[in-house]
Amino acid sequence: LRVFDQVDSMDKDPMLSVFLAAPKVFTLSEDEVLHLMAIVSEQLPQMHAAELSRCLSTVAAFGLVHKPVLLPLFHFLHKDRAHMTADEVVSAIRAVYSLGYCKPKFQRSLGFMLMEHAKEWRV
Image (cartoon, rainbow, N blue to C red; front, side, top):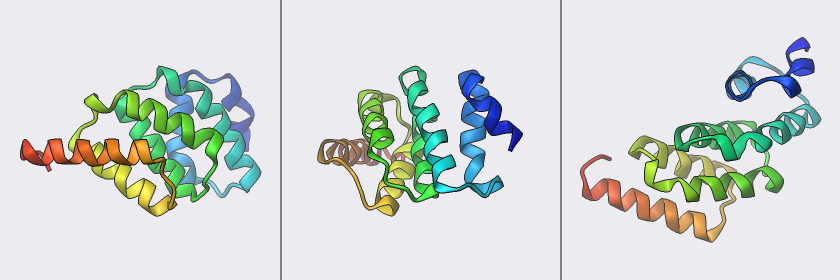
């Protein structure tokens, strides 16, 4: 696909749009998915909680437990957890559940954030 020839040189926003749409729009091989995930992982430090949460949901939609992408994604989501909305927390919980993989520190963080949102009647 021509889009994937250009994805290496895209800015964060269009690249993120391609990544988020990929599981629904494109039929990709595992190698193409891993290549796309590697490109996205380079952009993780510049993303905020909402973008990170959507990336985690997209990784779950691909169904690949690829630690070189998941571990930094968990790290940056944990770091920006105070800015996660209730919907983003629930979405992240669903994503890690469907993946069947989550680091204990991130799992505790999600549980804590869920309880905080529940106490504030936001869930």
